[in-house]
Amino acid sequence: MSQSTDKIEDLIALMARLPGLGPRSARRAVLHLIRKRGILLAPLADTLQEVAATARECLNCGNVGTSDICDICEDARRANGILCVVEDVADLWAMERAGVFKGRYHVLGGTLSALDGVGPDELRIPQLVTRVQAEEITEVILALNATIDGQTTVHYIADQLENRVELTSLAQGVPIGGELDYLDDGTITAAMNARKKL
Amino acid sequence: MSQSTDKIEDLIALMARLPGLGPRSARRAVLHLIRKRGILLAPLADTLQEVAATARECLNCGNVGTSDICDICEDARRANGILCVVEDVADLWAMERAGVFKGRYHVLGGTLSALDGVGPDELRIPQLVTRVQAEEITEVILALNATIDGQTTVHYIADQLENRVELTSLAQGVPIGGELDYLDDGTITAAMNARKKL
Image 1: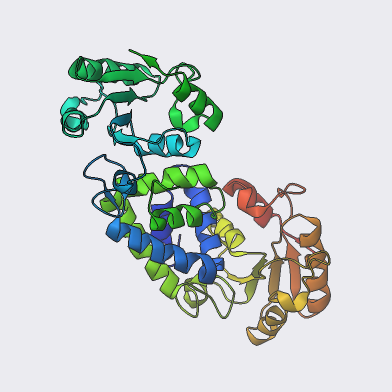
Image 2: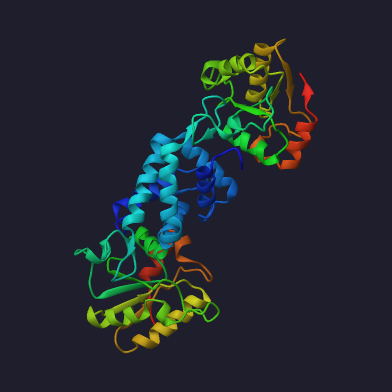
C-alpha cells in the first residue's frame, strides 16, 4: 500500500500472522493502535519488548514464563508427588483457570503423531520419565485431549510408566473430539474429580 | 493467572484490547508469539517500538504515516486540485486499495454527531475549508459513509464550500447503511466513476 510508510505496512503484515487475525483485521488493529498510541501502542510495544527478552520455557515442566524455572514449579504451596501431564501450555492455562488442580504440571509440547513424524524424543516424554523417579511422584494424571493422537500418547506414556506410579486420566465430561482449552471450567472440574485409574 | 508471570499477563491484557481479539484469542496469540519468539515476537516488538516512536497524523490531510507530511501529500505524481474527503484512515486505505483515485485526500477524523457531541471543530472541517482556498482545489469528492451521520456531515460541508468549488459525492454502488472499509474494490470503483454533482 503506497499510502502508508514501510514500517506501518511491516506492522500490518506481522499482525496478520497472529492466530485469529487476517489482513483486514490486522489493518484495523494497527489503525486502532496508532489512534491510541499513547495509552495502548507504547505500553504494548514496551511489554512485547520485555516478553521478547525474557520469555522462555520452564526447564523443568515446559510451561512458559520469564525465568528458567516457572512460577508453578517454584510455588512451595503446591502439592508435590502428583503430576498433571498436558499437551501444551494453553491446556495448562485452561486447567489453572478451572482451579481444581493444586499439584505440578508437565507440558509435553504436543502429541505423538506418525503422520507428522512426532516421536517420543520430540516431546518431553523422556523428561517425564526422569521426573517421575527424581521427584518421587505417586500419581500421574494424563490430561491429554480426547483426540486420536492424544489417546495414542496416553497409551505410550502408560507403557513407559507402568508399575512405577499410579496413572489416572481425566474422565467424565471431556467430550469425544474435544480440546481442553475450549471447555468450560465446570466440565474440567467434573472431569478432574471423576478421574479414573487406567 | 498464577501460572504465568506478570509481564505475560500484562501482554495478554493489552492484546485483548485490540479490535477483533478477546481474552481467549489474546491468550492464543500470546502463546503463538512466545512459541515463535525468534521469528515473530522479536520482529513484532521491534516494529511496534519503531511505529510507536514515529507514527503520527499528517499535518496536512490527517492520514497516518511516519513523517509530518504523509507519502500521499508528498507524492508529486498525484493530481493537485482534486480532494477526496473521507471519514477516517481506514476509508482512505480502502480507496487506495481500489486504486481508482489519483488526487489528494482529506481525512475528517469522524462525522458530525449531535448525540456524541462532535461538532465541526472536533473534525478537520476548518482545515478543509482552508485547503480548498490555499491549494486552489476545483473539485471536492465527499466520500463519506452512507450513514445518517455521514450524510449530515456531507450537507454541512456542502454548505461551507458552496459556490467555491465543484462538489461531488460517491454515487452508484454504495449500499444504504454500508461502510467504505467493508466494500469490495469493484463497488468502490463503480461508485467513484459514477460520482454525481450535489
